[in-house]
Image 1 (cartoon, rainbow, N blue to C red):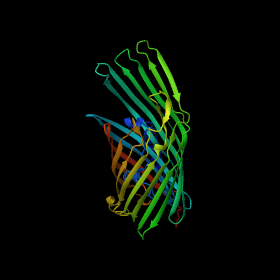
Image 2: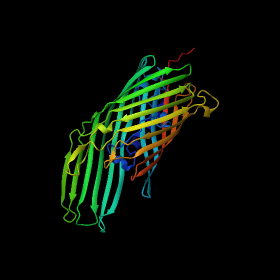
Image 3: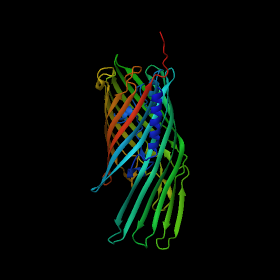
Image 4: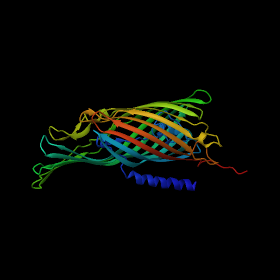
Length: 431
């Protein structure tokens, strides 16, 4: 137990160090609040984030808090994970590669009371990280305009959740999260002509607020070995009590004189209402199939931008749009209790998703996302634990992000998660 706790602490420290790095190099992270994080855990990363209808007492399923009630009275589950990724960016024949490492999550769960499970953890919400420049001629002259863009930051969540199984196959749950973070974005326009001024816009905000999500699940037994689970979630949309600002600096290239103007919007940021629904069908401990659908109502959220007509910093309803995502996935474990054949105890996973963007680019829909994944759940076995309990979860994911006349991204991501499932509360008898 001491070795496992030490391993958990060390891995958590590594993950926290990695979290200081940006989890993306995508130019698309400059829009909205950044790239939305995949908030699934190691066991369902291999199924591409399938979650709403999943119910497993050996895992932590943050995306539907009703699942917490499945944990048994003897178990304490720790789960930590990180990802490594390589992204290829291409536009009009030009290609660039970038690498990233990112802390993904650290979560835990245990039985609080009979039929009541408690969970807590740390997960990312959004990531911002980009740096690029554009150079183009002004008209037919040799004068060039140089645009430099950069940004960093993102939002994080620390949550506590509870799930309750009041009767039969019904379970309900809720997550309460503390949402915090900062972001900084900058855009500079300069020229090789000394008669043209240099202009820099710096955007930023600091966010400290809450987030509430609720979930429900119904598990219906279909015989001795089969079960159908239906799940749904709801996320509360609200203002974030943050004041986004922009600082505009104009520098006369000849005299060096600088003029600075600042604008801010009181309580100008918010998160949307979100809905999710899914189901899964499990046969014994051998195979599982499932599907999810989610909708985030970003289209109802106004977001700050510069009004090009008045040059004011205002809230606009043309920046964000509703995001929809469909996921299908499954898992197959040949024989979780075969003590002689390790490969039969391994869980083999696969999944695919299609998602629409949550932002517009110059008034036009941003890039859509197609992703597929495969994964393995490698059992960590000892004589005292359930052979399906502690696992090393490894998955590979390919994400294709594209839109007409915009940058195309192809990301290959390796996700690694380590689940410690220990019987902390078991009482031993000596005979």
